[in-house]
Image (cartoon, rainbow, N blue to C red; front, side, top):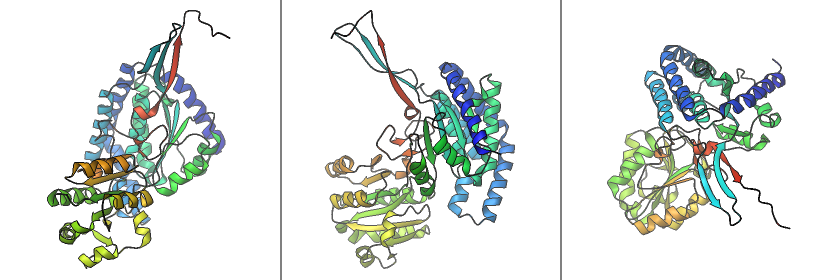
Length: 420
């Protein structure tokens, strides 16, 4: 396979398909999504067999448990994927919304309306569900999509992509609105990033730090992505202990492998004296390793020493780091220094302090008395998501339908000309 020719062919087809997709009505797009959900259910046994092959190969290569957990598909997960597709079909169409309108003194009518981005390239690792999430979100938002999944989930991704393309064909729409790159050659990724500026309008990476950094370093088209999910929970002096224990347990251990899992726990010094051992006991009873600073170790000798790199580590495992701080400003300073701009939460019964935290912490998602594991497009009512964007331009937070559109101005006149 000559990568250049193969990828250019995909790119040309995507551009043509994109122009056709823009003309589809909301009803037509929704019918495609419903057809995709139906086909995924019909092909579940094929998809599971393909996934079992990926899981087998991953285990033979010694993949860690968190990666295996991200990779596995079963009947329940496939049903949830199908349901998420149907949920997106029920959401309002993000295209064609009037975002702003005005009539100028000279009679010009100016409308700012939402429009598709065009062709979106998705480069992702591990999670086969991204194949579906990205495809249906792009279709609903009027975008063509080029999918390049990781080699560890190749068979799963391919089986899902075939189900999607089959449903699109049955809907009598250009099947090239969704294209899956059927090679694991890494040169395909490099070519997407550097040589497809005439075909791809936006690149969205979803995966580990190495992948996202590579995309951000090499891409010649705009990128929507995040580097890490180094999420924090700050426990304020006013926190209710039962609430704190419940939230911390869920935020760390519900699913350790997701980017919304908490990695660092910040606790007020005074509060920690009486309450830290109870919080630690709950975590350790669930086989969570706790690493902490010298002050936390003085209170509970079960805590093992944390290294400086622990404060900037995304564990994606049953490990949490603990640091004591003087007050809310100490917590804010720590997050500013070591955080990745993903998700932070404060546990506090003092609304004034909570609001200060929410105001000053500069992350994409900031919470009060809630688990960081709610950092998810579905939980925000956005349907599925392609990822959590931690940048400040265009998209921030869950990348759902609205984030996959841009806008243009439509100006209507009646012969007006601008004066000299």
